[in-house]
Length: 432
Figure (cartoon, rainbow, N blue to C red):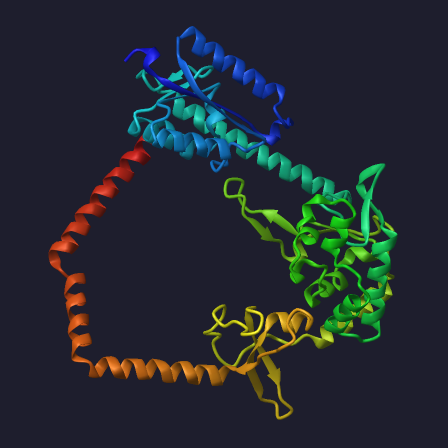
């Protein structure tokens, strides 16, 4: 095949880790290199795909996926990047595209500065470069994590947004200063808690006084990340306070002037899964900013909260979790265990929205666990009894069972799985 029969897609990528945003100089440079290559080789450019600010470990990039779609429909049959790392930094995924996907789709791939061209057989170095690119991403992730932990140990504020009641110091982004308006609400919440008011009563009081919740407050004060709370006209988004928010504020040590960092952490640099860090493993530095409440007040509130807490132990399995909904508002019903004076427990389902705030759903629509279990149990037994008495159903079930246990089908499936196994072994060997 000669060069000028190819329909070329140019792919450019720049990671946010490179310190550039927008259509940066690096993207422009990549385009220039790729376009020059096409001119020199008389190649027709069909489209240019640009992912600016996307990690090489993420293959769900918008333009990358658009390029894959164009390959599927035959719009392009050649992909050119500046180097292998622009395609991606996960050596397994990148190897899959260069060694398996592109050849399967009859797509020629060229990485200019790495001298990789799938039209040539001289690409033995490509897998090793993919591994080095992956190692670079892993090393960068490790260094960033170490740097963040060091900043946290120094008592710096490193979160993406300031906690409710505070704001970032304009002269020092690593320090918190009090936000007078929000701090007044926080002070009110702690005062009510000290007066033995429960979180539901506190939430209802704030609602009755038309005090918006933290997310709405931040949106009204220019934080565009929470704009959905004022743009959405549903009641759910109109600054509703819920007990969980109240409890989170009452338990946060930030309000006594302590900086609590590393509450969450990325578990793996490839999966990017965020996990909650246990309290005893978090990084806490005392006295980093001005407190809203005293340590004595905070400790007293913790004692009050602990005295109210009960173990969430149900008498039976929560079989109906996530499948029972309130007939009034459509919200999820939650299982609640309530201790009786006799010492026994009563389990019942109640509307979650009503439980959090009666303004969201005026009806509790409670139903005991045993009641609904009896109803479902009776229905199932009735259905099974009907089936057992129906000869046609029995015969139908027998026929289906024969189909599922047919030896020829099982042999066909076994052959199919063995073929797939062989394919996977080949893929792994090529990647290795």
